[in-house]
Image (cartoon, rainbow, N blue to C red; front, side, top):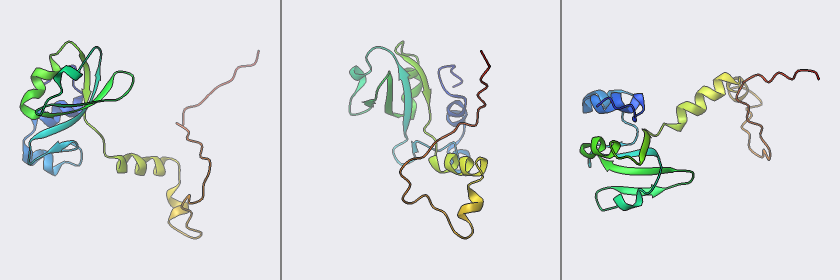
Length: 137
């Protein structure tokens, strides 16, 4: 399909066969093989609720985002709508969490004694890893 409104990974998934998507760890996320429906994250402006029907389900979120459940054969027409700014696939959270644990060196303390789990933690600080440089006045 190769639309600029579609995330690159979604473009690839739509251009792949069902066998290729199944073999991949990422290309089938959000796709239901039985119904051939996609669950997608959409950035939009205006009103998408008018499209809500038994065929396309729109779940509006906040700040111009929605989760849209749509048949694969309607995605091309949907993306061409003026209201639609950008469409992407959902991501598997497991891989994001695993990569974050590896990057922050948490895995070693969870794999050996005292087997820290975070249970009972009341406050956690999440750091992106970006440096902040404070310049003197």
